[in-house]
Amino acid sequence: MMEKKHLAKATLVFMFAFLFVGLHSCTTDRSEDFEEYDIDTDGDGIFDSQEVLDGTDKNDPCDPIHDLSYTSYDPLNLLWLGGDCDSDGVNNGDELALDTNPYGDPIERDLAVPEFLPNLSELKLFKGNIADFQYSDNVYEYSMSTPLFTDYAHKLRVVAIPDGEQLTYTGGGLLSFPDNTIMAKTFFYLNDERDPSLGKRIIETRVLIKKNGVWLVRNYFWNEDQTDAELDDNVHGLQVDWIDESGTAKSVDYVVPPNNMCVQCHNKNGEIAPIGPKARALNFEHKGQNILQFLKENELLAGAPDISQIPVLPDWSDETLALEERARAYLDVNCAHCHQTGGSYNESFGDNFQFTYETPFEDSNIYVERTQIKDRMNTKITGYFMPLIGTSLKHDEGIALINAYVDSLEE
Image 1 (cartoon, one colour):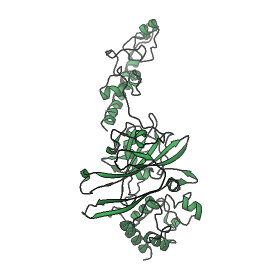
Image 2 (tube, one colour; image 1 turned 120 degrees about the horizontal axis):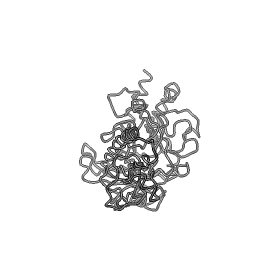
Image 3 (cartoon, helix red, strand yellow; image 1 turned 45 degrees about the vertical axis):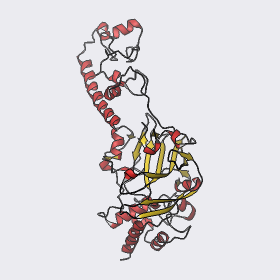
Image 4 (cartoon, helix red, strand yellow; image 1 turned 30 degrees about the vertical axis):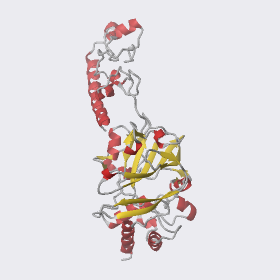
């Protein structure tokens, strides 16, 4: 985050440089060709006339090449600021903001690798001990404005955006991602919810990678030592014990789904797609900053209007909100990936359920299917119990919310 703050400062440098260059060009007398050459167009500290004599490019701030001790450049020149004289992928202006040498050794950047390699560590989403969740330089954490229930597991969501690329705003729904984007969601439990310093148990990391316009999905299962996770598409069952915030001992028979079930959830109109990163679910404050605003400010999101113009998916756990808002948000985040037009359930069995938040109530069939909704959330019958994938426990809070909402429709 500190690096990104420095980069933001570099933007101000560019703005002042733009004004400086503009004023300079307005006050320069270009009536004679010789006088035109007596300027330094590229800001490298060498007049254009001399560059012509030397056979170097007067429009290239990095021609000629200089060593680490060179300091005669013009730090307000727009062309020089935009150059990359040590070819390290960081322009000269940003190097000044980062207090690094623009003619120095290339800055080594830790970038994620968009390939399904045998071990999660090889994807380089995290630096050092990967269980510490220290992100590589093009990896960014995000979250959801409303919680997804997965047997009370915590979820760490990250996206690796290829260098020089941007996400694209397409309305309140799913953002558009460039090829070689990586999305990863790691599931873990704190040993004691009252004291995170007592450690955690990491279970799995589900990974989506976009290649040639197509999303691919695989799963990584963490080892007992918590040092790495192996690519493993098989189903796994394990018991996880933890202590909740009230000090009560909890236990769950956690199930890591096989890869074909991951595909089922991520299916939309016969193609794999991310589920969570919709603009309306990212338009909220996470760890002190609005996620969409952060992406905009760091030039990682193109085409987005002011965030005040972007819809927001309510937090179903916020009891100050209206019952209908909360219930519709719960159905959206926990159920709508299958229960919408193009979702896996609707593709197979018809559009009886339309649970996306933006679907008008009269088109959602919630009232028509109200009895089945309650029954399928309350039962423990395998294959009938909802959500079908990702849970083995009843979600008491969610069931209470949906029961209250459905009951209110009959009043």
